[in-house]
Image 1: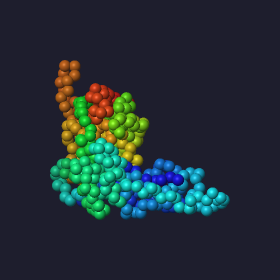
Image 2: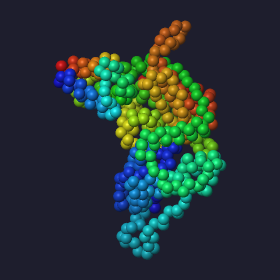
Image 3: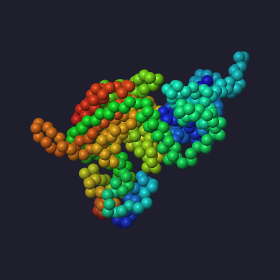
Image 4: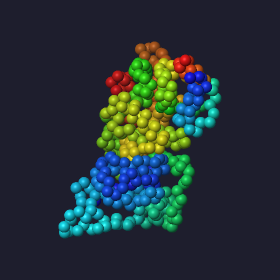
Length: 381
Length: 79
């Protein structure tokens, strides 16, 4: 029997609200299928399943808000006889109803981890989240000494989505600044070659097939990361855990305010054209509120580009549990000395925010140098 | 297609990208006014291309600074 649980779609997510099921009992599902739409503080997300099976029971009802890790549905695994199917089952009758999950005090994974860090026993707290779930906020209150076990009358979810988004960003960024010893490095990168190459490339193409400089920068980051796995992964349980792939979270600002940073998977393996298509699609879907759970849960590093807003340099904050973030400012003419001559060349400041627990400035500096070198050979990206 | 029809299409496509948009000052820089980043700008041009069947080379982007300029440019191209 497979238990389908509400996944964590980001370190700041404690709970989600089921908007709708995309499957019904009896449906066969494959790994990667979207089975539900869940609203998080940041977006409505298409939640995928990662096992093959046949849906047996939908437990969570649309409209219900549930903590992360709650069992939402049960499925029969491939090859497993569906519990309700009375086919030709001779003896050894399977239990007609699956044993209910042990009802235990719900605690979100983020709250549990935070509790460990602050020395708070989460099992002793009364939660203020849905179904009495203990949230990060409860843990923080307890740590400050206000461990009043609030009897929690199912706090009304904020109707204002912008407020919920702000709270989610506040939680993640506060945690980052509280926990992560950031170091910052930046390097001025000449962009004449990249710009010339891009102009020539786009000249021959209709508007629907043009590349943006952002696609080149993303590809260069991914390629550089191949030699710097210590910047691509997670800090979990007091240790660095390298990521399996290079899945870059793209910081996307939303017109109604706030931002979201879903992933493009396996960036280093994609051609520039594929990457540009993926980027355009991701931005469009992020702004339309149609992202997939794997895009929310999988980023291994984040890239933020504020060049369009005219800033020279970005000092970005790492999105935990990631251990690095790369920033780009605007590409603009800047003084540049070469062979004893000073001229103006288009250049960009590339910056790195690194988690000093996982890497040192020396590595970060070498990464930026590798990134700068890759951007000098755009034809090889 | 006359300039007024083109203006309506341009504003409709801008509104699809920036639903909060109310007024556009025709002679002021558009991207700043509407807060269009590079991706929004590209999507805007793709939408205009699809609606009007007019190809806009990248080299011409600098001629498209304001709403007025965009309408004039497209009207000339469609003439």
